[in-house]
Image (cartoon, rainbow, N blue to C red; front, side):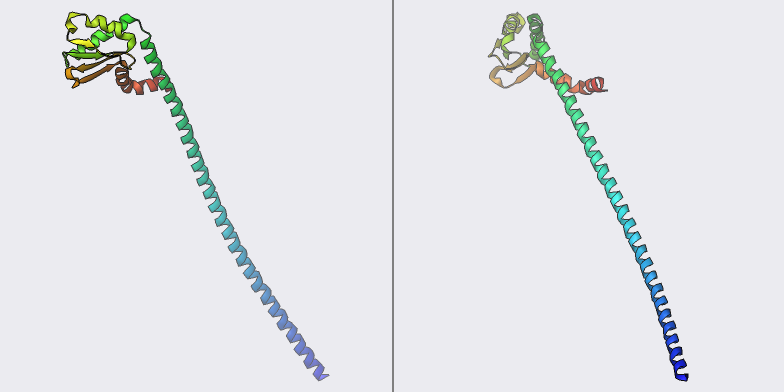
Length: 191
C-alpha cells in the first residue's frame, strides 16, 4: 500500500498542478481577452469618433454647397429682374413722344458741340425727323445727318473726317446711371 499511497499522492499533486496551470491559464486567457476587449472598444470608439467627424465634415460641406447654390440662384434671379427693369426702362424711353426725343437730341447735340463743332450725327430711324428738325436750327448748321444707327435713342456724333466720335446714345447714359445706381436699386428691390 505504500506504493499506492505514493502514486495517489503523485496523482493528487499532478491534479493540483494541472488545476493550478488551468487556473493560471484561465487567468491569462481572461486577462488577454480583457485586454483585447479594451483594444476593440478603443478601436471602435476611435472609429465611431472618426466617422462622426467625417459625417459632420461632409454635412457641413453639403450645407455650404447648398447655401452657395441658393445664393447663386437668388443672385441670378435678382440679376434677371434687374435686367428686366433695365430693358423695360429702355423700352419705356423709346415709347416717349417725338417731342421728348427732339428735345433730347437738341440737348445732346448742344453738349457734343463743345467738343465737336462740326460733323455728322447718327440716330435711329425713329428719330430721323426729330434730328432733321434740330439740325435745321441755325446753331447746328455745322452738322449733317448721317445714316441711321442701331441705337435705342440719342445720337452718335462723328467729327469731320471721323477722327473723333462721341456716343450720346440713350443706352450709354442708361449704363452710366445704371452702374452708379445699381447698388441702390438692388438694395431697394431686394433689401
